[in-house]
Length: 306
Image (cartoon, rainbow, N blue to C red; front, side, top):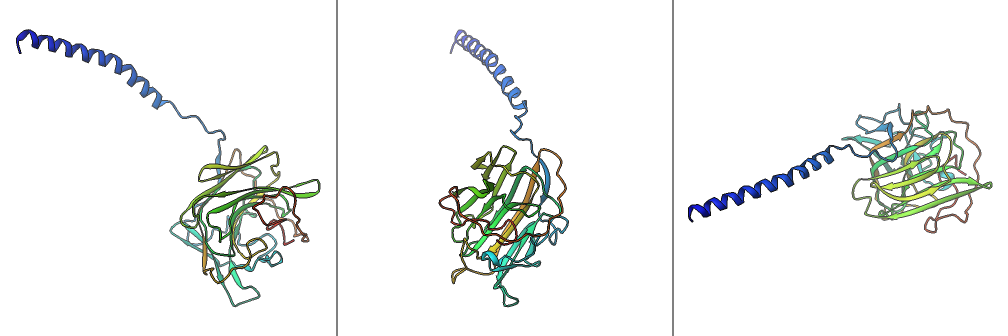
């Protein structure tokens, strides 16, 4: 290569580098500015108001009681378990609610329930659980909200599941209208929820209820939002009018594993109100708004057995 050619090559290369710097500079500056721009705030700015990561050695009695406001028995609606105060195990930051057979007392099984009716009962918020569900005929895990005065309806089922259908969760709102019980539910079919942990949440505002499974919206009810304070409950029922009784395929002990429970609000958390005395039970009835795949009718939990 002669001296003239080498000179021309360097001139071309220098011009190319200059053009590239002029183009790339503004692009890089724009990208840097874009990355520094703060993300848009979420549609609802929820603030953590109540939580339990279950990191202790035993159930936190400042947050939870192990019974309904009216007691530990639900045999009047077909449930076969007694909600025992010792049905819990905390290990490595997880709560296990265990159902097992028993030969003591008048019940065939013992299991567990936690309720926040003495500590936390907000009106509106976002309520979330991360958990792993048990598998087996007759098992009935749930995370739900109930009025702190034990009236029924309303009821908000963040999720409930049947152990013989481990890939399905039911998301349901109950309310009273025209003197009768109404409900709107949706069944979500997903992965095997007994194989790993998943998150279930509901956002309750004055306008609507919105359900999420693993962060994805799965159901919505508009214009039927409950009013008044409601407490949180998580439990593992055995038997009942909806799931039926366990059979020979059901393995005990069976455990409902909970990683955390969290509640968020857009304002200060209200103090739980004192529960009223239990009222007499009533018979639930079916109505035209029942989801076709949801086989139970009337109250399952809500108040003293109906």
